[in-house]
Image (cartoon, rainbow, N blue to C red; front, side, top):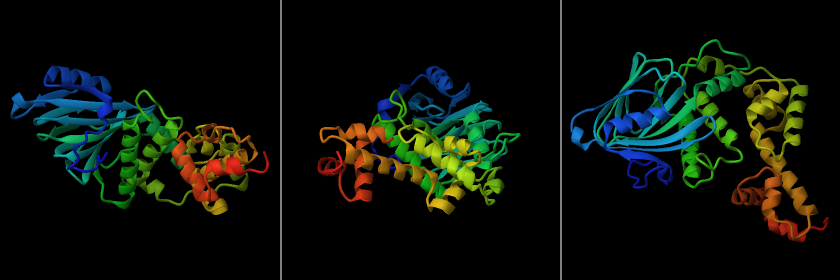
Length: 335
């Protein structure tokens, strides 16, 4: 699914249709149930009004695709409970959040802050990917990143310049999330075993990539953590190899901020906490494969080692150990 291409014929999240209608009142009512109450005013060519909304919910955020067949003006006021990142994949829109207006089109997205008045006009045929993030969850992620509570919600620059290297990388992660949701492997009715980690990466990644009222704090060198805190983090990881843990949980176990945790692991292990976790899971799987009976299911060993996707587990295993999991299982001399 090439959701990043304006020429794509494949509708994102096509297996997660929420509704499609030509009735303005129905559209207003159903969209309000997922987002918030708003004015919805068709512009020129009202007779061509049509809207489609695909929606895949996670634990603390949702993935959405929306399109309007005719120009519409949308006035939600303050969103209150959530942030909303909007990425045009066809057409454009004029978006105002607070005092700043954004001409959103290919290459320029927007983010709506929940504490700022919002108004926007989607052009005829505009299609967007929308990432809805729970305000309280984003606030907790902020606190784990900086290491202390914040007195006010973070305010993002409403203009999202997708050409910047950091946002390019983040957008790739977002598109990958749309793809796994479309395949039924995450979001919607089939939440991934590591759903919390997928969502945490999207939220923390956007916080680190998009300019905001927090940027000056995130650009500072994080405080160094003690060897004791690193040992706590390592112990927590080793005790939860088969569990769907997040970097927030690891940082909490070590009693430090996420950024300090990342610095500590880079200094001591030359890798990120997530990379360290993945390698330890592979080591655990290697041990199990060498000591289990040949009839043991590879999938069971993958799951017992914290991997929920057999194909990705096999690829990662071969890249580290130079053979497939099955070859190790059948050739082991320790069982």
